[in-house]
Length: 240
Length: 222
Ligand SMILES: Nc1ncnc2c1ncn2[C@@H]1O[C@H](COP(=O)(O)OP(=O)(O)O)[C@@H](O)[C@H]1O
Ligand SMILES: [Mg+2]
Image (cartoon, rainbow over all chains, first blue to last red; front, side):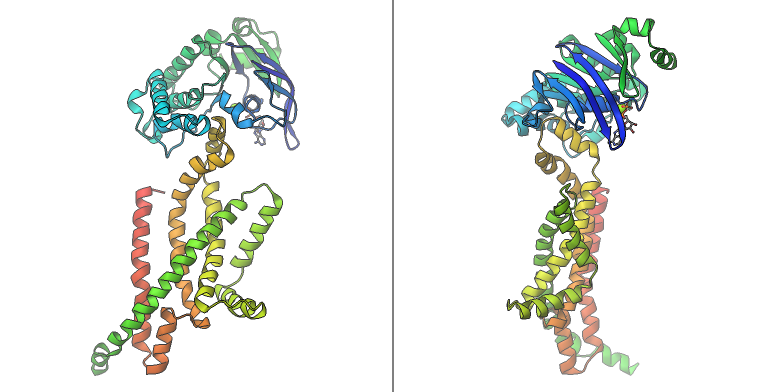
């Protein structure tokens, strides 16, 4: 589903990604862990071209993102993204947040979009919040709306960038529950996370990133119980 | 005491009224039309100032700095005398006034627009793009509505500033309220009442405008 080959990304003189090779298969849940500043967000953002790739190749569902002829808007609509700070549209109601993409990108009818929006809000447990504004929601509720918003485009892949890091601890569970449901339904997911419990339970594979490279990757149980790379060991000893 | 009574009973209070009414109508007309055009100029140049295209950015910057770096009185003189006489474009005084306000307010509004758009969190653009909206669509549906809300108070301020700026068009004989009061003064030799009335004429617009603005600000809690 996703194939990344020798991906480099620099901001000016600062090389943040120093040659990443990775693959995500259909229906796979890949969790990316690593210290702050190691390039996890940048890696994720390269997967839907929120960051321009410096060199290397990213192929999603057979389409190369570095091909200049690519329809970038169409591609992005097929790759859902969930941000650490939700980034909901504060001037639109919860339902409008979810239906904007279908209405303006897919140009479905208002009735159809509303129906889809309400069913997605039900799925994330927020049917009763359809007509309120995001400002009235808790962080956990906001993040669930953000997930519904991304799902509304019927994406082939969902990218999550520390979706629970900005949440109060008691609100993390609701968001993780929604993500678990998604994983069980067979959604292909790449999740940057500090929730090691989630990575162990739901991850088909864990990638440990440090200093712009993948230091180690493998089955979650192997990585967590028996890390091979000293950097992985050091990182895990701090967070577990 | 007697002098004071005389002043209070002066006929000039009433006699200036028709001129105030007529002049204020033109003042408001020039301001409204000028600021409205200025808003379009400002929106385009303000967005140009956010452009990554160096030429577009440079052109917008030159315009804004030229206007902000010179007094509006000089701009009006250039428009009305230099340009219209040298190039033979016959601008009548009122049109010159409207154009001067539009060009002048446009430069300040450009900075209001730029500031408003820049004040919106970068994550909003990213969220819009990530669901597949184009950058124009994201601007239109996501960024602009939020930025515009924040622009309302400074836009209201600019309106008040431009309203007061129209008074300098007396110098190019635009028959707005300041010009008419100056004429009244020179034909009657009364100086006190006409100019007090002139102050009141501006205040009757600006004070309610400021009150309304403050109310809107509180509503929007920006
Ligand atoms: N837009 C940017 N401009 C310059 N440097 C950036 C930018 N985005 C990220 N960086 C830098 O790239 C490095 C990796 O950042 P990031 O991918 O956010 O790491 P992580 O998500 O693992 O914490 C950091 O040193 C950060 O300062
Ligand atoms: Mg990050």
